[in-house]
Image 1 (spheres, rainbow, N blue to C red):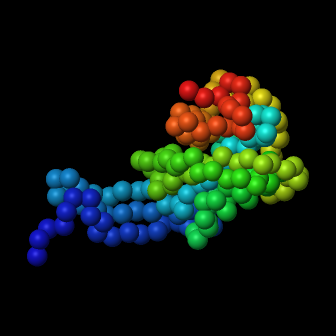
Image 2: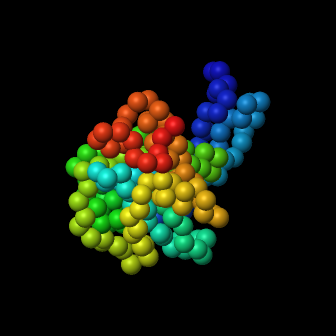
Image 3: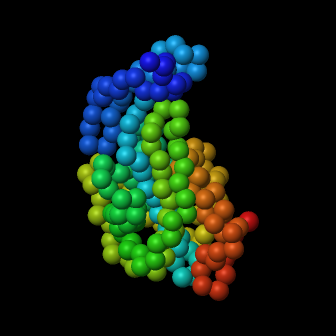
Length: 195
């Protein structure tokens, strides 16, 4: 019997689990053929929405982040549970955190936010055709909703002292989508957005 190929998983053990993720330990074959151990966070993923109104304005949420002990400006974003679809989660997060419903959803792409420590993949969507319906927050959330011109929102995300990596990556995905010739709003791109 041949030796396993490098990076073949030999064994996986979930050490701690909760409804959102697990902490796992794998035994695997390293590049030199020896056995290695890898610890990581195993999670279904996360999803976010970049809401854009017909006038080109957007919404940012100011979220108190318990682990960091501070507030961050972000696009509405949340974690997935096993079996949920990315679009469903993005729709729920936009409704719950920003108090918005959207008629039109466009996938912008996905990325790996913690590639060395987690299996998480984050999915970003552009949400348009917006209607305000009011927030529906959980007891663990403190979130302020602010509507502002897109250029001002972009500046707020980019210039804050401690940036939210997922929202910054979402901006890059949006800019890539715009560079492919898509329009952010009917009649063109909102002021301060685009390549």
